[in-house]
Amino acid sequence: LLSRCLQCCDRPDYSMFTQHRTLSQPISEAVPSAQASGVTMPLTAWSFETVSLDGQGRELRRQQRQAGYYRDQLSDRAPLDMVMIPGGEFLMGSPPEEAASPRRESPQHWVQVAPFSLSKYPITQIQWTAVAKLPQVRRPLPSKPASFRGDAHPIETVSWLEAVEFCDRLSWKTGRRYRLPSEAEWEYACRAGSQTPFYCGDNLTTNLANYDGRHIYGQGRTGRFRQKTTVVGSFLPNAFGLYDLHGNVWEWCADTWHPTYENAPQDGRIWLENGDDESRPLRGGSWMYFPSYCRAASRIHYPPQFKSCNVGFRVACDG
Image (cartoon, rainbow, N blue to C red; front, side, top):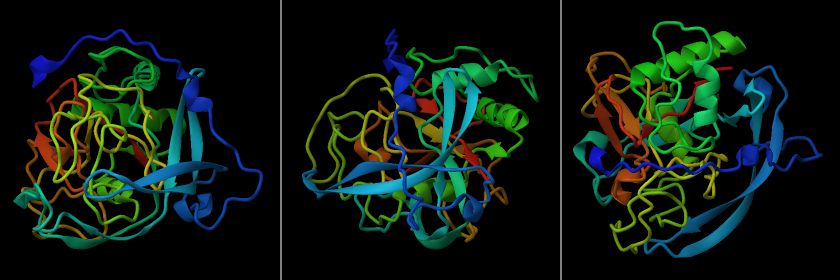
C-alpha cells in the first residue's frame, strides 16, 4: 500500500477555514453550550447541511443542522476549530449482520460518553507546521512530513508518538489539555446519533468521502479513486458538524490495542488496561482503502512508530 503514495503539489486556498455562517441568535439547545462541555470560552454557532443515503448509495434526504465551536489560533494562518460534542450514550461496535463486520468490532456494547470537543477536521499541514515550531516536550517533530503537499490537506506520514507530541505542544501553548480521542469518543463522534454503517446511512459514495471508489460496499456503486488526500472539508459533514471521518486519512486514537471489546470500559475513557502497548488503534479508513474500512465501527492497528501517507489524526479536548 505504501508504494501507492503519489507526490502532489496541490496548494489550495486555506481561506476556507474562515468561511462560516455566524448566527445572530443564541445557540439553540441542539448545540452544546460551553459550560456543559467544560469549555469556558465563547462558542460560534454555524449552520450546515447533512445528507442521508440508502443501501444503494442513493440520496434520501438533506437536513439543515447547527453546531457550536470555539477557535484556538495556532498562528496567523492556522486556526484550529474545536466542535463541541454533547455527551450521550451509544451502541459501540458493529452487529454480526453488518456487511464486512469482523470480530475485532465486537461485542457491541453500550457506552456513556461525557461532553468533549473534537477538531472539526483532521489536523492539517499548516496546523502541523505551526505547532512543530513550538518548544519540544518529549521528542522532535519533522516540519514537513506529508507526502501530499498542501496547507489545507491533512497531515500524514506521522506516527502515534508524533501525534502525542503535537498534543503536548498544543496543550503547552493553549493551557488546555489537548489529546488524542479515545476509540469510544471517536466512534461516538463519527456516528453522531446514527446506528448505520456510515454516519450518512447504509452506504457511502465518493461524492461524500475520499476512498478507493473502485470497490463497493454492499449494494453500492463504484466511484472515483483519487489516489491522494483531498482538502479537508471537501465533503458534507456528519450531524455533529465534523468532516472527513470517513476516508481521507486513518486517524490515531489514544488507547492501546485490544483485539475485541471484551471487558471494554463503558464510560468512553481511554482504554489502556490489559492492552497491547506495542500497538495503537486507527479509525476512519483512508483515501487508499475500500469503503468497508471507512465504516464508523471499523478499526485497525499499527505500532506507535508506524508512519504512512494515509495516516493522520485529529485532536480532542476536555475543556
